Length: 190
Length: 115
Image (cartoon, rainbow over all chains, first blue to last red; front, side, top):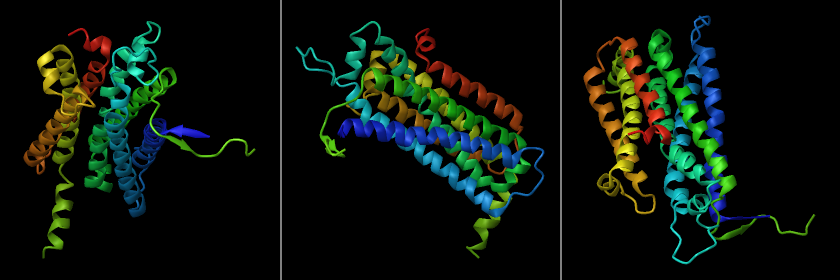
């Protein structure tokens, strides 16, 4: 079992940070609805308040790690320009996709949308985390601010889901590969 | 004295919705600006070249860095102005969600290419 270093970074970015962030979004939405619904008149406990603050801060860190590794580690490999005369474009995913009319839209729509919309996720969740930290249990007294937080978490989820979907499809059609080979489990042992 | 003042200040400002409103409006403005900068970099060769802050990442590096700097600056300015105020949040939310929706829509290439 082996990975290339670029493949490993792609997994860290997509399946590590990105997928974890998407799952965390649904958890945050459930927690916000459960805690601040109009039917729930119980006061917010200290432990619950602290938990939500750290949960949203962790989400913000995760979202920033996802976009930063995507833009500054993986994207340069994706958009690398092949030297003249190269016919095998396997190591140049963007050019590989654009070389075939049946896959070019994965770049022109998929990557072009993903590379920009993804940044709305960390911006939105940073705002939600800030409001949760600043207002804490007082958020219960600010229904419109609460609505904004829930709306931004939803937007963050949508933006991350768009980026995640296209990231998975792009990697399926033209994987970012190459670099050093990392051996996890030697073959022939099973 | 110094240990008590910050918490007292935090409790009192938590009664105002101004700093929350600043965060909401700044985040939506930043998202909208990100989409606008992406369109500008796509349409203008000069802006595209200017936005190449990192050669490896290309214009995306400048577009996102400028949007983040603008977002944080707007946030700081609005926070300083609004932190001890109560605003009509319904209006702020409406503007914010329009900007946020436009931000998401304008990053969609078939829509961005209309400009």
